Image (cartoon, rainbow, N blue to C red; front, side):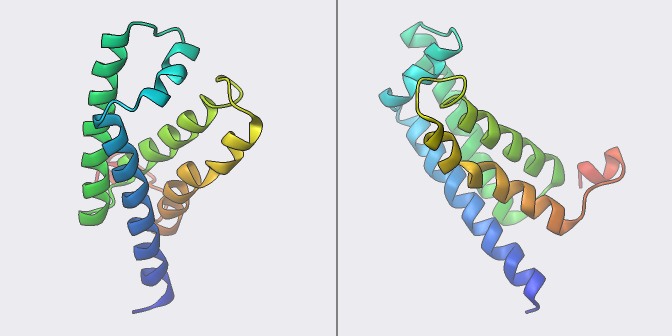
Length: 128
């Protein structure tokens, strides 16, 4: 196996682990995450639980997808979602800057894999 394939699989496994872990926490309705929804103006407990369920299903599905086939549009979504979930801790949310810094790999790993696999040049390439 060449180095690029090895790096690709390391990133795929790491990204899958991140999204699987976060997805399972979301499916469990992790109460500690309610403050992040509240930071963006979502305050209803049932609404937050419902949104966590949706997020959890999406995250788990993406974790599995990345192991089966790393589709570029999914990787871009994962990078943007990882950046967003870092930013809702700081500067949007109530946590210190280090909570944001600690999560750089959440968006950096999917972005790195996307770049490693080749940045798509057409809409068709984003979907394959």
